[in-house]
Amino acid sequence: MTVVAMMWEARAAEGRGAELLEWARAQELAREPLRRETLRAGQDRVLVITWWATDDLRADLPELAEPAADLITRPVHRWRFESLG
Image 1 (cartoon, rainbow, N blue to C red):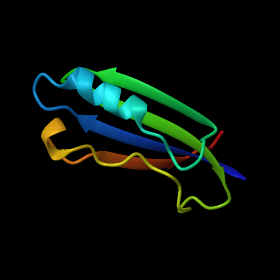
Image 2: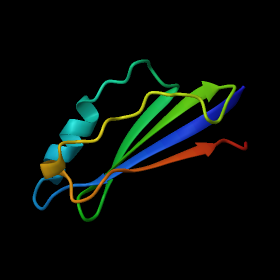
Image 3: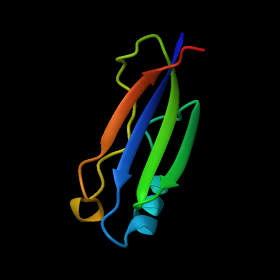
Image 4: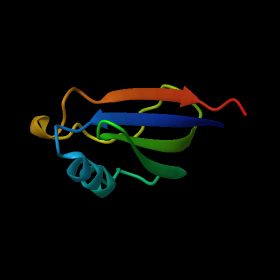
């Protein structure tokens, strides 16, 4: 069994950082990950990391959706990492 960390990062439209953070926190996934953490950074960026137990790094795992286009400044960035330790 492998643990996969999936990262979702978005940058809010000007003045809408709190709204993007609230939106991200309210998003439910199709199933519960091992762990989920929500963070924020400068420039009204929001990062959500979820951890999943899986046998396949490329497994189809639940992800946060793309927010409404007027809430963000660019498409969401997504990364997937395999735990090595």
